[in-house]
Picture 1 (cartoon, rainbow, N blue to C red):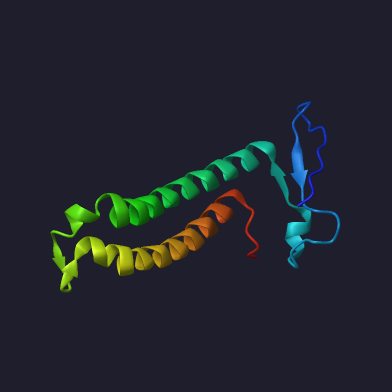
Picture 2: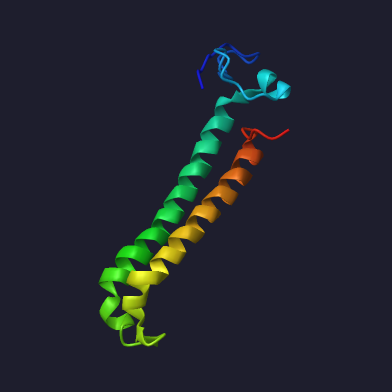
Length: 120
């Protein structure tokens, strides 16, 4: 998305216009949308917060349960194996797949909240 900035009515407020090179969504109303600098900053802060939260879950699941806490978790039997072994081999994969869906759903909500989604 190319950014063009212009003076707003208040003096030096910047706005971001959608790309003028023709790479816009097919929806007509997106051609006229203007996203304020404050909204862009809020959008990216929400995006980064989501990514950090999901990365924390990923780290705890993979490094924490699979390596750091594996000895303690192996004391708990789970499907005939130690829980640490199961988490390293199976549980982490399930969590990673769930993280993909959580990311997609949460990003759709964030995009709608800040008006950058491609839906009508």
